[in-house]
Amino acid sequence: MTTASPQSPAHLPIAVGADEVGAALKDTLAQHLRDLGHEVVDLSASPAEDYPEVAARVAEAVAAGTYERAVLVCGTGIGMAITANKVPGVRAAQIPDTYSAERARKSNDAQIACFGHRTMGVESAKQCLEHWLGSEFAGGGSAPKVEKIKRVEARFLGAA
Image (cartoon, rainbow, N blue to C red; front, side):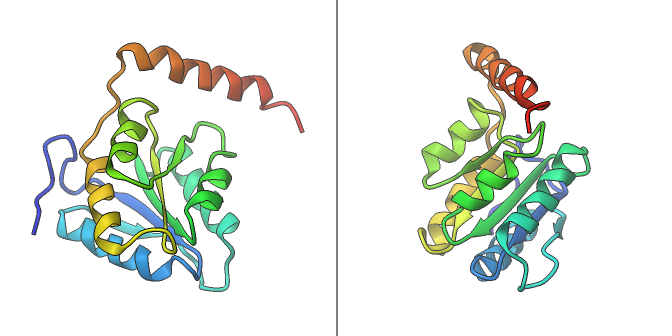
């Protein structure tokens, strides 16, 4: 069993959610998070929910500050990321590999990691999750870019 890294303090509450397609991988990742020492709260309501409903609920909880980080799972992770990114203040990234997992945090300060049940294996997803959890926003040259993302978001908040 792996232990939580210094960058990823144990007992950090992490929200998880999935649609019917992603439920099995979500359950596996949730257990992996618990094994790493994190508190996990499953915000999936029922298997009948579609990914936009789950992603919106989880993203709203992150935006409200209830959770610093969250994990979403659907068939590809793409639909979850698209939906979660509609919630102001949220940066969600579809995570296909360990490098992208690190960059999602270090360069983009992504609070939500989105995984695809149909696009990656369980062990790969666990490794990606660990890389994402162990990474923090690096600031530096990425900070102005994240600020630009926030300005784009603010510019379009009033648009319907």
